[in-house]
Length: 211
Ligand SMILES: Cc1cc2nc3c(=O)[nH]c(=O)nc-3n(C[C@H](O)[C@H](O)[C@H](O)COP(=O)(O)O)c2cc1C
Image (cartoon, rainbow, N blue to C red):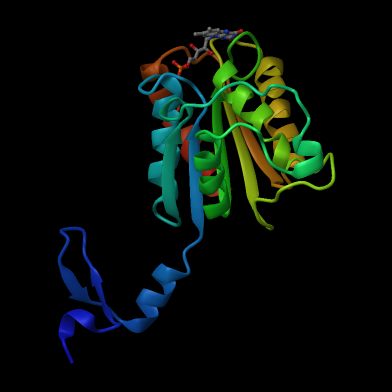
């Protein structure tokens, strides 16, 4: 039998095949999947730094994907409510691509900065566009059962109440998408990348609670 086709062979990090034990391969196939979302339109700011720390931590235990809301093009919900009758949106854009990532994931971690004391408009626009999947009406589309959701929020100001307000927005979204609300972290006094990186220990401690 060709060694490269052996079921006990897999690609290593250099792109070469190497033999692994069947047990090890099964564990790799059975790894849970985590999606970490940078809900800020800034791809290299404080939120991106926190998203990076979380993705690196989760990679030790999960198959992990990291996305930024700004990687996608989609428009505002028109409020037409046709999805209440059809479970489908009249618009056809990247919302479906993001939803495919949600369908793929077992665990979803949304990381959002405060913009005017709530999530950035780009992420709020995405939430509005998820109305076809909201359990507030029948019929509605579904992203799959048993998903766990976590919310991480940050802001420049010192008062935790504002972080909690963003957490409420994200958890309200999770609730209607039937994603279980499993935990949250609020980080005050974070206005740039360096201040985010300085909170690494707090963020990695939180990651240990993500199951
Ligand atoms: C448009 C805008 C609005 C903001 N509004 C608030 C606010 O209401 N409260 C707050 O504490 N910080 C606010 N901030 C600061 C951000 O929450 C903070 O700088 C965060 O670290 C930005 O992360 P980012 O660079 O990854 O987007 C705002 C920043 C921007 C750009």
